Image 1 (cartoon, rainbow, N blue to C red):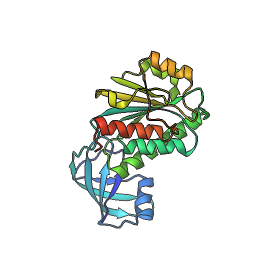
Image 2: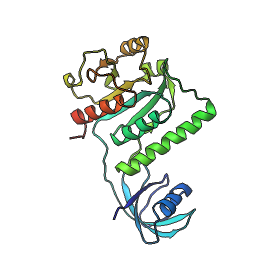
Image 3: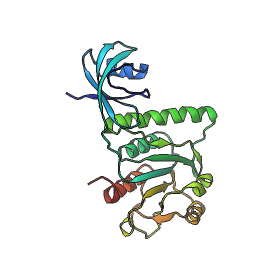
Image 4: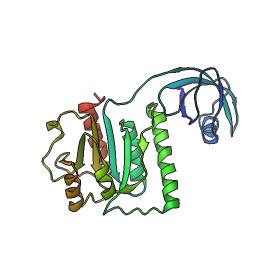
Length: 242
């Protein structure tokens, strides 16, 4: 029987009881149809996971008794940041979800010359909350116990001088540089543009700030495909995909 994994931002201590947040409670009761006595796994994004049993459940509230914890770590040994041009609609959601599954440690959304998404303060707050929930759900599914950090969106021109990764790569389909020719880095940042890619001036500015061009092959990949291919290759070469 599948054991549900649930995220909660609360502190988790064996031998204590915990009341889940309303959304998580609704998911357990209405979607998974959990009953009293069922086992669940809790995690709070700080590392480790905890076995807990339902002692009360209804449509809006769930109480669990936490039994024991373990420090299971499923994080990749490769510290990789994805700097991604903000794209429209479900493309961005897809990238965040799959990048989380692929073990990215940090995600920085950026506004570029070809970014069509406009975010005022109110929309930005809602978007950040939405993106966080996507990452939480992805961690619940793929069994990560630490949440990757999602930085607030910023302009690419502001971000580039701040990036301090050991290796910095910008995807550029007109380059001849290959991943196989590089040594394993201590930390890595992948820069990928939005729909239409980065402009030539943005690629040149990235190169002036220490980013090396990288090609993934002879075909031009979409903005939702390119970062996932790049992350997969990096995790295979230097991380924990095999």
